Image 1 (tube, helix red, strand yellow):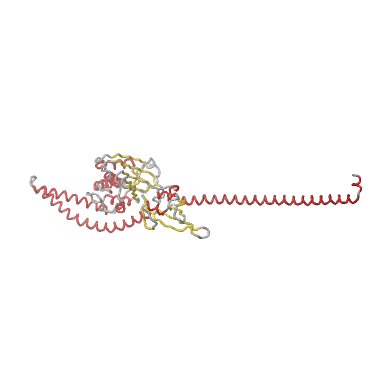
Image 2 (cartoon, rainbow, N blue to C red):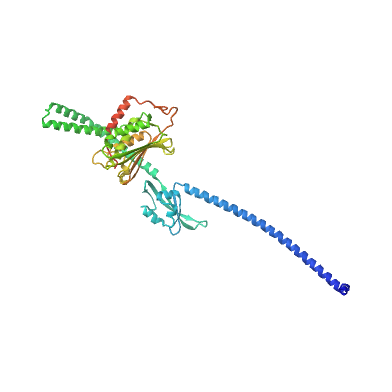
Length: 432
């Protein structure tokens, strides 16, 4: 040890070695500090990137939820199919129109799904259940503009189709009505003379003479024809309404009694469901009874072997007529309506019965139209028919038991008597 410590050369070497070690250690410390700083900087950058990615994921999820909400809120049915025509997604409107859930529709080819329901991609109106739809197809493109499938759009045009039918019916009935009115008046005038002379002849003939029976038959035939002409003129006459508030239960009960002659012929179970929220109806009571009687008679005749007759009354959503309204529905469990006859239900002289002239529902339509209401018919062959009358129902100021509303006049005795007479003129026509 003494010799090592005293050797100047060796001491210098040792000092140089320690100095090199210190410099290396210092360099290493600097490198470590720089590396630590860089790691901290990278951690901060990574945290920022993670936050940005997290925010983007949240925004994307919110956008996905919003787009799903928009898709499900559409009244148009949307079916997404891939390049092979296989369904990958459908919204709620499409599920309702096609009668299947999204899970049931997926992985099925859209042409087969449509064909099973008697549908095809076409702009022409097609009936599916109680709805009328038009079906179109548009390409689905990705961000690059390349085709990535198809969108099949099912547009529910039921209301538009009904409005077009109503417009066509009004044009058709206007032309027909003018001709009917002229013919009815021309026939009724000489018919009165025939009935008068037949009555005089019947009075002058002996009761036991065979010719008196002929005179009686002439009188009966003339009265039947006069009843037909009276119905024609009733249909053609402009309907002038004096509306007021009428008790709902009394009005419907009276209508059931007036239709008792038809109800008694078959075993019918009557169910009435009247909402407590509609204690009164804003209408002309005599003419609305006429409407209900005819619908009830039609419903009973549609069930020759008996069945269930339902009468319901409830409030209707504001958007139906654009104002407060109520829905009065007469439902049967009968044979249903042939789809080929639906567009002609309210045409005068249209009937599928051996008897009757087909004026009943035409008069009903005229009365409902005069009330500024509308008629909706839903029917399934073999299951039954529901005929709904949607009527305006203005709010009642003050006491809801009042029989009159703002701006209305009380129905006088002559009005009531005339209404009762009109009900007698109603025929037993059937829509089946």
